[in-house]
Length: 140
Image (cartoon, rainbow, N blue to C red; front, top):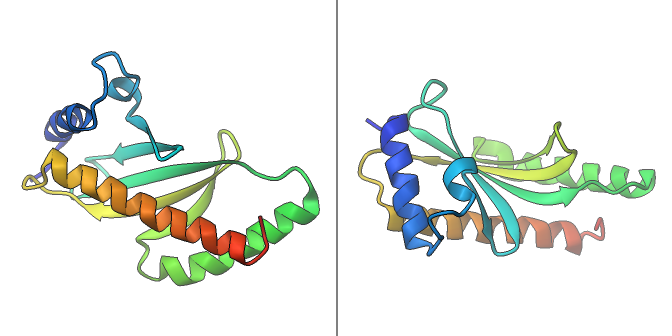
């Protein structure tokens, strides 16, 4: 079974696979810049030892009320589709008012750093697709 100690070793191996320097902030924060997005690997053994959340930061919300309302309507509509299984949803980080896409992934002791890197790439492809859908709907 996965646990915090094993996840920390996996994250260290992931950093090596991704070519991050030994002093990269990822080692402390678990935030990595992937394809232009700050990406947090969030693992909480007490909450769910078999699940990893990947949170991709799309930046701050629009300041104009009309743009904000349009974005929120679009995000809620996308959540209706993507969130059916609860595996990918948009939310707003209350600490900084940034739009976040969270994807959830099974995690066990057989997952390698290469597997995790592939999961990150897949999550980003999903995030870009969702973002493009928001743009195509004229909300951004």
